[in-house]
Length: 91
Image (cartoon, rainbow, N blue to C red):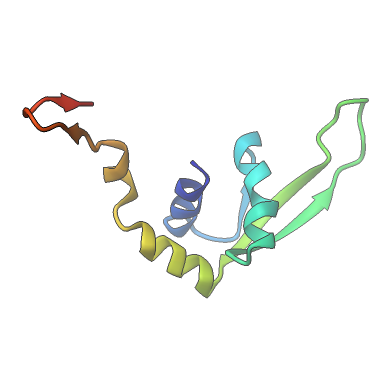
């Protein structure tokens, strides 16, 4: 979940270079929505399918901090279970 990446950024000393491909794809989205401040730099192409860029997250904006605050305890979200009328639980 991309918002969990945002929460991890809160607990990381910034600036930080993003190396995971899944997270690197989230950086431009978070920049466009104004949740983070980051620099994206182009790499020299080494082949036909080389990575296009690398990203360094410099900070989380006030809007980003507000979004994190809305999330509350995100790790608890992954551990939640649904409870049905007869007491059965779906984990």
